[in-house]
Each structure stands twice: as structure tokens, then as C-alpha cells.
Amino acid sequence: MSNHEGIGILKLECPQSHPVGRILKEAPHQQVCFDPGVQVGPRRFWPDEQDQPKFTIRCPQCDRAVGDASTTLQDRHRNLVMSMSETSEIATLPFV
Image 1: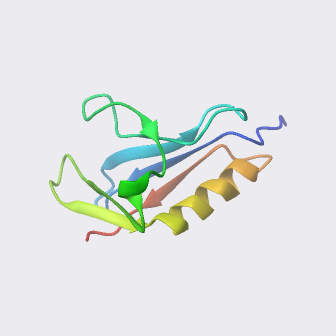
Image 2: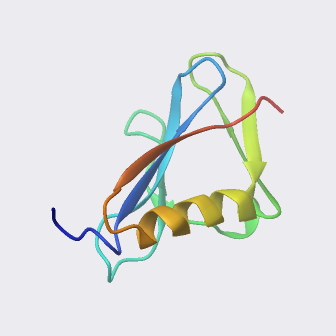
């Protein structure tokens, strides 16, 4: 078993299981980024001012907004990054 502490990918989905993006940290020395997907837009540092206090994004397949509290997603991602065995997890965001 290898130690993956310091990296993690939180895959974000809408309630219909469509991918809406990823919150990721690919190396321990990198900052956390939001990756909306190559067809949607470029990666950006996360969270920024527009993501406070609630992170929302539009599902490209449903064309409906989904979101959750930024602190909730930060806690889930932080726990994943601190894990010594898990590197990815799926978070289902409710419709807003």
C-alpha cells in the first residue's frame, strides 16, 4: 500500500449522476483547484470569492444549478487529502 497523503480528487456530480467538475490537489505542494472539465472551462484556484458561502455550478447535461456549502466541500476534500489510502471520492451536489 502506498501513501497518497497530500493528494485528492473530489468528483462532483448532480443528483442524476452527471459529472459537473472536480475539486483536486494533484501534488502535496500544489494549491487546491476546481476543474470544470475541458469542454466547460479552465481550471482555477478554489475556493475563490465567488464560491463563498455556497459553491454552485450548472450541470451541463441537465442545465440545472447544483451546489453545496463551500465549507462542507472543503471539509470533505481536506479529509480526502489527509487520507493515507484514498485518493478520490464522489460528492453528489443537490439541485439549488
